[in-house]
Image 1 (cartoon, rainbow, N blue to C red):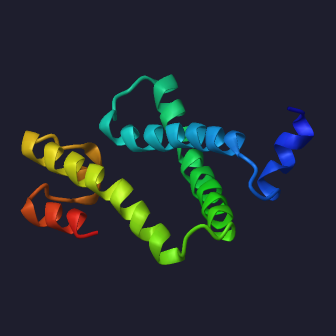
Image 2: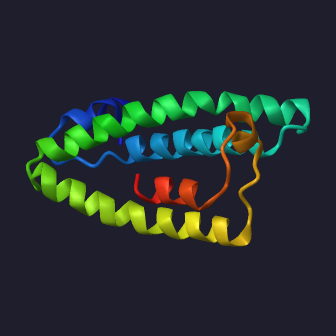
Image 3: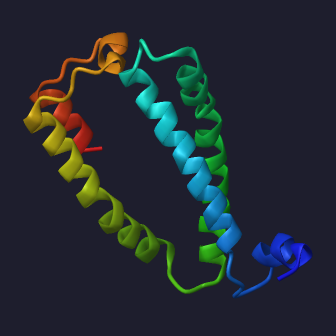
Length: 131
């Protein structure tokens, strides 16, 4: 596969976009780094720099995801409603399970909660689960 075919592949109908998925994976790692930054306020300087740079991964992930969603919908395999329903049931169950596990284990005292004055209580859990 040539570099040119990799760069134009998202614009060709029914062409695989593995490179786009790979780039989204790298951006997702940036998202993880950005989110765990709040759990390590006393991390060494190099680790803090790596975690803080993850905020760019958040923006890149959103842009690439929007492009991927638009590409998927333009192929006409699903309606928007079917796509959103499939996405919800792919993402929400794991999200809810992780939230419940964190709440049940009492692992909710991160520096993010302290920074924003969020109390780790049942009300907060309800707000997260109800989206």
